[in-house]
Image (cartoon, rainbow, N blue to C red):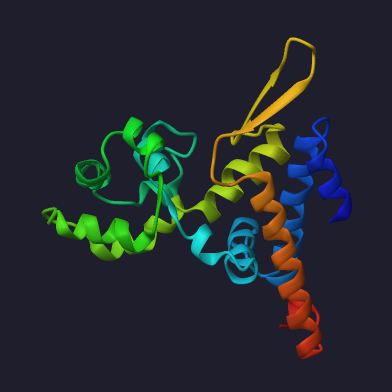
Length: 208
């Protein structure tokens, strides 16, 4: 953890720090939930142990709107969401266009999204389907799918803008709510909370 923090604090290896922290989360998830698939364990450890459940359960409205144009457009779990077009239309009346969302309210609670969609009285809306599939658009899912997976498999960091200034110095700008600071706090929370639970129960993570 200390080394990862050093990497984050220094510009030269900032991305390596993010990669390291994202892998820590995966390792903790695998230890605590060995019977779950990688992505499921990753999201679950974040929600259950980071101390940031409210933050990570927020829905990224921009991703919800842009999903049909994203790399996840053909993923089965996402395609199972019904009435996507009607849902986006209803939310547009409340939050505005994609540009409005970028400038104002991009991250909202699951309850707010469901409440606004329900109020729109969409004909044939399957509310249970909405309840079940909306978490796929949460910050917890995006942490796994766009930070961890892209970093590990593609050496990509979609939440970070990188450029070099006139003097050749590398600069980074975060473009998402999930920042390096947030990720470090997440790993710290998981480490402390999981360790305390193990010590209290006298068990290893996989035995809890």
